[in-house]
Structures are given as structure tokens and as C-alpha cells.
Amino acid sequence: MADVIDLGVGEFGGLFGLDLGQTNLLIVVVGLISLGTAFHAEKNWTKWLAPPGWVCVGVYFYLGADHYFDVADPVLIFMSIAALPVCIAYGGWEAILIRQNRTLESVDWLRGAVFWSAMPYLAIQHIPLLNAGVVWFTAWNTSLFLQWSGAGDVHLGQMMVDLGGSTAHVTWQEWSGSRWILTDTLGEGGFYVPMEFADGEPVNIGFVLGCSALQSMIVFVGAVVAVQNASWRRRLRAMVLIIPLIHILNIFRNAGIIWLHIEYNGVWDWNGMNIFDFSHAYAAKFISLAAMFLMAIVLFDLLPKLHRHVIDVLDPFFSFFGLQLKPKST
Image (cartoon, rainbow, N blue to C red; front, side, top):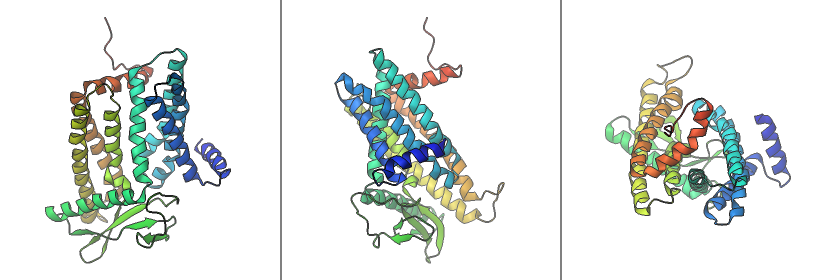
């Protein structure tokens, strides 16, 4: 199925001289603008923008699974593949509600949460100065923590740009692209900072945007911003609490992965998997998801309406498998 979607999206983009990555970006921007318009606009007809918007968002994440196959990340592979049927289901739910002239506050919230989560992330991802700045800041904080804790005398190398291919890597200064808008399709590494020991020897680990936990931060920001019936003071308090906490936990995560790589690379093996792959793709993902679950509980206490929205939008899927999130009414 992925090949069919890849081919269809590629053929569509080819009509406008776009490659697959550029076409996929265009699709998700159209989808997010559709969801954002349906969320913010007061005209009833704008709600019809939501169903195709959901499909566009699902296609974008589905095609992104190819990258996670390349880096062998099973958690994100599953989430990317599952995004398409889930988004189609929500698009269908929106269409049914519109035809019945009904409105569900929780569905409206989810539409806004996706818009306010994905649009800022895409903006940072495709503005090279912001992208590289976030990558550098994360790598710098991790390096400082490793040195302060005595876990490793690790320093930052030069900011690099992956142009695609195993040898097409240039420094930030040598890169000829625009610093304000990313018009090139870069390689899997994008903008990255390789880590080095004090003597210049490479650690063989580099930081990319995905190492910043920006995705997790933006998910929480979008979920909080979209709760329209909560005061801005309460929503701001929630974001001030969650965003720095995620960043600090992510620095611990990154430093732990680097320390394990330094100490156990070449001496630890599990079914052909080295310590970096295991800690990065499995252990750290599990711990991160557990931490996000605990932070969600804190947010639910600060914003009870957020809890109600999450339960409402998840209940149909749990009900499909015979499970029930909502208490039965008497």
C-alpha cells in the first residue's frame, strides 16, 4: 500500500516539478490549513474542510514511515503507519457530524490540537535558522551535562548539513541554501551536530532535530492551546510547567544514551543489536512514553477539560475493541 501511495503522491508532485518530499510537505500544509480554518472560523461551511484535512495529515505521517524504517525505530514505524487509518477514521467522524448538523466539543478540540501541534513543528523544521538553533541548543545542553556529571568529556563538532547520500555532507558555513526557508530536500540527517571527545576523536553520535524532544513539547502545547474554554492564565501555567520539564528529561535521556554508547559500545550485544540501537529505539522510547503519560496526568489536574476531551476522542476506538473508557450512565 505504501508503494501505491508513494507512487500516487510522487506522480502528483511531478506535475508541478516537485519531488516526493516537497509534495508531501505541500499536502500536510494544505491539510493543516484546512484543519486550522475549520477550528478557528465561525462559518459552518468551513467545517467541511476538516475531513480532507485529516486525510492529508494522515498521508503525510504515513509516508514518513520510510525514514523510521531506515533508522530501525519500531515505535515510530508503528505510529506513522497507524496515522493514516486513524486520520481517515477521524475524517469520517467529522463528515458524519457535519451531515447530522451536530458538533462535539472534543472533536473540535482534537482538530485544533493537531493544527497547533503540527504547524509550529513544521515551521521550525523548515526554517533552517530555527531548526539548526534547536539542534545546537539541545546538543550543547547535553554536552554541558555530560561534562558536569563526569559521565564524559564530550564536546560539539561543527554544525553539518546532510544533502543526501553517504558522502554529501557539508558544514553549515559551506551550505549554499537559504537560512530563512528550506527549499531543498535534505538527507535523513538534515541539520545535525556530531559529538566529539576533547581530543577531536568522534563519538560517532550526532544530534538532529528529533533529539530535541520538540515533538513531545509541541504535542502538549497544541493540546493545551486548543482547550478554548480554559483561561489563558491556566493554559500558560501548564505550558510553563511542562515544556522545561520535557527539555530537562530529554537532556537526561540524551546524556544516558551517549554514556551507554561510550562505556558499552562493542562489548554489549543483544540479538545483533548494539547498545546504542537498543537504548535509543527501545529503552529510551519506553521511558519517554511513560514520562509523557505521567505529565499528561499532571496536565489533567491543571486542565480537567483536557482530560474530558482526550477520553471523548479515544472512547470510540476503545469501544471498537470491547473496552470502555467512559463510565456507564445510570
